[in-house]
Image (tube, rainbow, N blue to C red; front, side):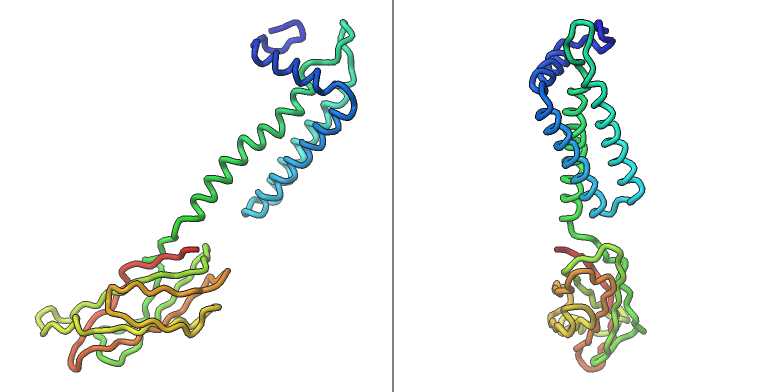
Length: 231
């Protein structure tokens, strides 16, 4: 350690000296405190908006700001050589840099994860009684705690009796949204077609109706192949 009890890392000491020299004067200290205040409170607001626990966010922000404030009496002191202390001004610089060093990568990771589609293939519940025949309507429902404004899903139709004549190629589905901002959107296509619906923001519960168009005498089973929520 150095004479002031601080680590004797040359690069760290040089950085602290530069900060101390630059922070000479009350205006520089005021700017450092303002930077701490803006960075900590701004990061706390973003953290809270992303679903952080208010108690944890508040306690963390308060602790950082209290720590920064505690540096002020130390900065006002003078050492035996008459020089201002070396490390307290440096701490005021480190606090916002540390917040940004942790916060920016975390925010970037969150943004990447949020941009990915959410697979809800196993969350779509079909109220169906097999077998289905021409003209039957099936209700599909979905509940999610991670709502997105768009739903894309595909269905599969298979013969109910594998030994029966093959009639799946002539089957079509008409899918209609029943809830949300995109209510009464209608999509028609063959099994395997991706049906895309606009749900609007915050639609945690989605309901669809699926109308089967098949050849007379065909008995089929309906299932969800894939379903994704996306932006």
